[in-house]
Image (cartoon, rainbow over all chains, first blue to last red):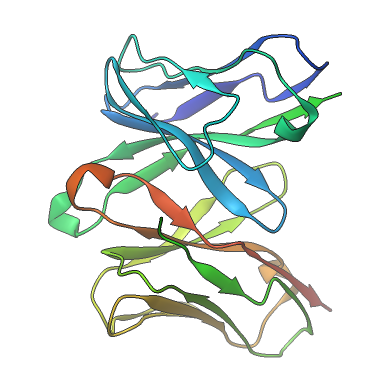
Length: 116
Length: 114
C-alpha cells in the first residue's frame, strides 16, 4: 500500500531536549516536505527536499533541521525545542504528474508535538 | 511569498442550509486543491481544479476555480451533520523549482447542527 508514515504520532517533551520526528514514504517520490499546522493559520511549509541530499527552507524554517540521506526518509529534527514549536506536524510526499496539470500530494497521519 | 486568504474561518449552520467557502489570492496558481480534515488525521483531498473557470461537482459539493486562477470557492448544498469538519484550500505552483509546495488557506471550521 502506498503510504507516508510518521513516528511518533504523539510526543510530549521539555524545552531544549533534542528530538527527531521520522517520515518515510514507499512510493519512490523525489519531493518531500514538512508542514506545521496551527489553529487559524492552515498548514505552513517548514522544509522541503527535491531529492537525496537536496534540501531547502520553506516558509517557517527557524528552529528546525532536516536531512535527506535516502530517498524514502526525510526526518525533521528539533535541536532545542521551544514551546512555540508546539504544533501538529505533517510530512508530505509528492508525485510529479505534469500531464494532469498538478502534482499529487500524499500526507502522513500527523505528529502532535507538545513542548513544555 | 504566495498567500491564500480563506473565509469564513468559522461557519455554524443548521442541517439543510447552503454555504459557500472562499479562497482568494493575488497570485496565480496552476492548480487549486480542496481538502477536508478530521481531528487527529491528515488532510484528505476532495478535488483539484486546474483550468480557469473550471467547475467540479462531488455530490452536494461544488468547486469552482476563478477565471484568472487566483480564487476558488466551495459550495455545499443542503448541508448535513456529516459535512462537519475542517476544510482547507491549497494552491500549487506546479512549474519550476517550487513544484510540490502547497500554499494553504487558514481553513474553515464547519459545524452542521442536526
